[in-house]
Image 1 (tube, rainbow, N blue to C red):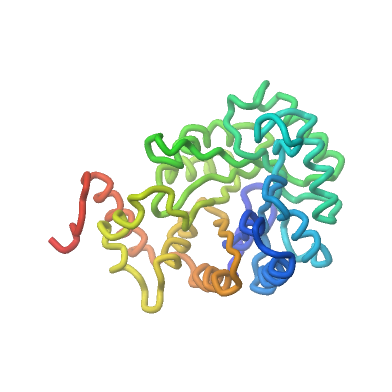
Image 2 (spheres, rainbow, N blue to C red; image 1 turned 135 degrees about the vertical axis):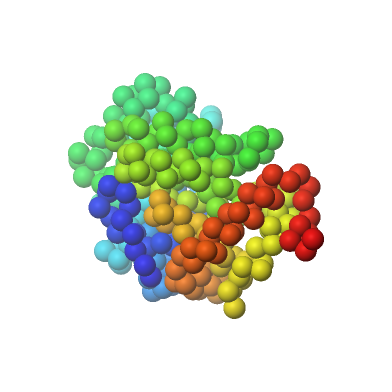
Length: 306
């Protein structure tokens, strides 16, 4: 599979990454089989979190003996104490998270540690506050190699859910001196951040990881696909999911797209889609043109048949 440098980290990352959230409900035997297939298929970036029940444990159990084959990204500021808010943005929580993550993942370092589900106003002191200062200390100690964050999804009632927070805050976070990697919602159906992603990459060298490539975030998903006539742009043998993956990976500033799955065949399908490579330039531009038009026509249906 094609690889791409993750911003200024120097890490060479496969275009398709595996999202460990989907490991939460599966059995240990299924997780072991699936994770080994992830590596056997050539994926070298695995994203997880303390919040994803069993995910870190399964990764440590299944593939810690293959640690040199993959880049490991997990998260911090997840409150695992059983009381209080889901996320706690303070030094104590970062330290609790990293110690437990290293134990469960059976490793001595995390390649990319990300502040989880964050907005700038959640971090007292901003880039000079205790959370990032603690992460700098962990980096100096060799427990983490690179610092990143994931931007929180906006609320379902917001305009352009779930991408609004990414659109509003990506540039701010990218300008912070120690932030090397940002994970943000972006895809064919969630394009609000398309231009700010490019700007963050160009202005600050930020490595951008996209999530939500295939997720149906609202009830208009299928209608917008049909109204845009994107089905007409598929190559022979290509599925809608294939096209959605390739659309995201065609964005020149996106390093990788995170896709999670609980099934080995679905995983293989996603790998095949990524292996097709970016969309042809004319197809990519036509897809954007059609999506732009549908976005400007309220309630548009069957417009390509008129």
